[in-house]
Length: 260
Image (cartoon, rainbow, N blue to C red; front, side, top):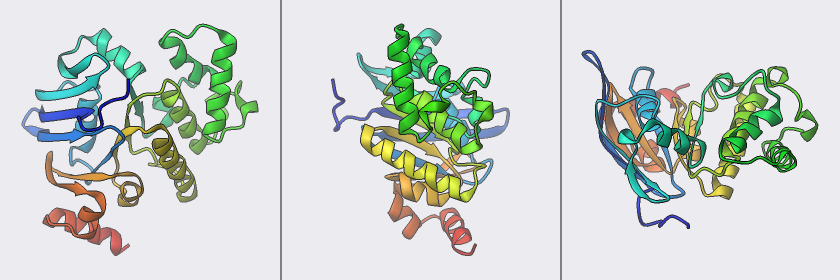
C-alpha cells in the first residue's frame, strides 16, 4: 500500500543527544513527507551527524521521538526493540555512509554485497538474487561483468555506487545519507549526484542528506535545515534558505561559498 502523501513518513519530535555537558543536538523537530528530500547543513561539530545517527537508530537519543509510518502504522523507532529496528533498517530504511567501506563488506564480491541485503529479507533463489544484483549494478553504472569482483578492486566512486545499490535493492522508503559525496573528486561527485537525483526521482524516495556542501543540497534537497552548536537555526525550502538566508549563521555559510 502506498503511503498517504498528506501524512508525514517521518516525524521527529524534540530530539536531544548530549555528550556530558556538550550538546550533540537538542530541540530538533520536523516532519518529512513521502517523496521529500531534506538536507541538513552546518560546519563540522554543528550536530548534523549526531542528529542523523539518532534518527537512523545508530545512537540512542536522551529524549525525543522518531516516529516512522511503518506498514502497520506510526511507530516511535526510539522505543522499538532492537530486532524490530534491525529489520526496519533492512527493509524500509537504508543508510549511505560517507566512506563506502563502512557500508560494504570488502571481502565479499560486488554481487554478494547486493545479494546479502536481499537474503536478509528472505530471498533464497540464487538465480533471482544474481539477476537482481546484475540489474542494480547496471542501474548504478557498474559493468555487469564486475559482479564477481571485490569492492577493494573498485575506485572510490564505484565503491560508493555499489554501496548505493546494496542499500536500494530492497526498495526502501527512507534513505539516510551521511556526506555521500565527501572525499570524492569533483568530477566523480557530479556523476554520483546525477545518479542519486535520478534514483530519488524514479523510486519516489524520501531522503535525509547530511552534508557541508551547499551545492549538494541545492541539487538534491527540497527543504533545508541549518544547524549550529546542536540547534536548528533556520529551516525552509532549499532555494528560499540559500537565496534569502535570514539567520546570521546561514548568511555566513552562504557568503563563504560565494566568496570561494
